[in-house]
Length: 80
Image (tube, rainbow, N blue to C red; front, side):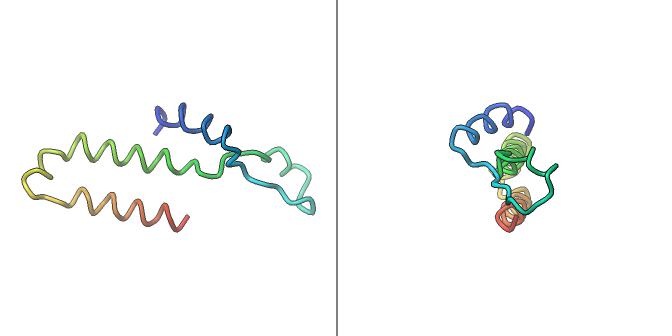
């Protein structure tokens, strides 16, 4: 996740996928303007890479429990 974050966060900033701050909110919250909102993608990608690296042999033998873990992580990521 940390490795993916080094590349993903600048790309999200280029795409202007930042958080908008409402004017009626607290003044200290204005410092969060422009914070990338899709940062959870780096965790999803990190989980996917880990599952592929560590569970590849088992998946080729028909053991799909690693993919179930990824599916749940992906579902929770979509929910937010």
